[in-house]
Amino acid sequence: MRISVIGCGYVGLVTGACLAEAGHDVVCTDINAARIAQLNAGEVPIYEEHLGEILESARKAGKISYTTNIGDAIRASDAIFICVGTPPKESGEADLSAIDLVARQIAAEARSSKLVVEKSTVPARTGLELSRALAAYTKDSKLKFRVASNPEFLREGTAVGDFFHPDRVVVGVDDPAAAEELREIYRPILERKFHCPIHKGACPADTKGEFIVTSINSAELIKHASNSFLALKISYANMIADLCEKIGADVEEVTHAMGLDPRIGTQFLKAGLGFGGFCFPKDVQAFIHLSASVGVDFEILKATERVNKQRIERFLEKIHKALWVVKGKRIAVLGLAFKANTDDIRFAPALDVVKKLLDEGAEVHATDPEGINGTRSLYPQVTYHQDAYETLQNADAALICTEWDVFKKIDWTRAGAMMARKLVVDGRNLYSPRHMKELGFEYYSFGRE
Image (tube, rainbow, N blue to C red; front, side, top):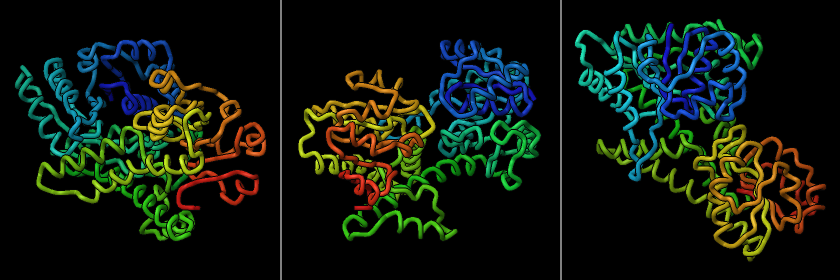
């Protein structure tokens, strides 16, 4: 099937690359001419494991192309995946202006009927408005636009694996024909008829996803409901951590035992600096706003958001407790991206920490395997290092802000000999408190003191 992907951001690139690798002919379009030029030159503008590999594979097979001409992309396709951004407004409401613009462009440029698929994360009822806009702006009454919602459940750092091995593929439609078209698009993935870059053709037998057909409103709601619930689990674990610190319990012992209950599960039940990135904060705000707009006070999500914002304050309290005076101290920040295995620094807790330290007059040195370039333009006064040990040289304190594997493997005996003071404030609970104290470190973490 011929597919166009509108928007070459994170979701758009992963979607386009994976659908092309699954055998479809894909054209990707974006208004960002520099990004399209990068892609045409064979460069990958974002860091995501395996993405460069499948983009190159699809390019060599002639299955993927890139253009800034959205009209050409629209006319060349049978199905159009809308993957543009929906950033939050100041109110928390999702800004849907990019989706509205794309709808008008599709209506104006199409010369044949199309399947139009929402891939961007949008609030419920967006599909209805998208259908209305397509009908209102088309000049040819014979054209029919079948609208569907196909929310993405991609985790940054494992997005390619998530796309090829989904636990579910959700499609929201208002007519059976659209559901069948989407089933055909996903058939190579559901039936394992693609080359898997992760397992090299030997995929585990238990990773087949379920194809779920719902109404459009339900599909749109599923994405926000899922992300908000996961965010709630993180904030819940952080409140347990605060309680553990007060009564002398260990949060990891508590959450581990909780997570063994299959009704609860261990994933996202992790205390620390809290959640960041573009999805969870944005989706929680949008879900709160959507609920309020229909008269539902989603108080539990307001608390989730409030608890998450407090994690930075709690982390800084630990830093001040240890250092007393921050001004003039050399502080090593290990981790800038909002999570490991991505270069995404949007809403990263580490950046809030860096800003607070700079405001207090600290000398900040920082490292991250992928997040330095994005952070440098925001905070040029920080000294950046590619190597963690260079970052720790003469440091008065080391702050762990992202859970990269390279930080888990640091030789703290070596690092301690390089530091001005053997002090670690661990925002991700990466290390054993007992082991760090045996090495002679002052060690602070969440819920384990």
